[in-house]
Every structure is written in C-alpha cells, then in structure tokens.
Image 1: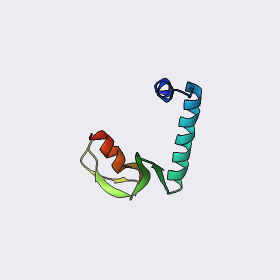
Image 2: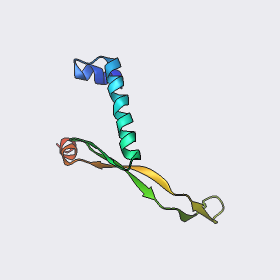
Image 3: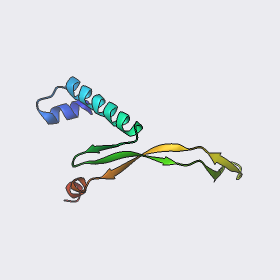
Length: 87
C-alpha cells in the first residue's frame, strides 16, 4: 500500500508516506478516544459510538448472558466521496 501511495504522489518517497500514514492514524485514535470526531475533508467522519451493557442470547446454549458496555468506531461518508464513487 505504501509503495502504491508513494508512486501516486510523484514526490513523496515510501518512508515519508509511512510516517504520514502512522501520524494520521495516531491523530485519529487520539481524537476518537477523547470523544471527538475525526474529519477527513471530501472523505468522511470517524467517531466512536458507545453501546450500553445489555442482556443477549448465548448462541451456544440458548441461555441469557450479559454483554458488557463497548465502544465501536463508526464512519459516515462525505457527500463528495459519494459523488466520486457514483460518477
């Protein structure tokens, strides 16, 4: 992936692309962990959604069990990305 991005950019070597990518991921994780939203212009928004603790059916034995509270990452597509994909 890094070599492909490097060749598409025409000016960034593969090592620079890796550093930019990992810095971006680090920023995203930090923002989402703090409860914020990570926006990428013309692409979309990443944010965390919390699911409360709840009772669920155990698929193995059919009994009820407690599913703990959890956080999942959600992505909302930007309108410009939808337009790019539907051309």
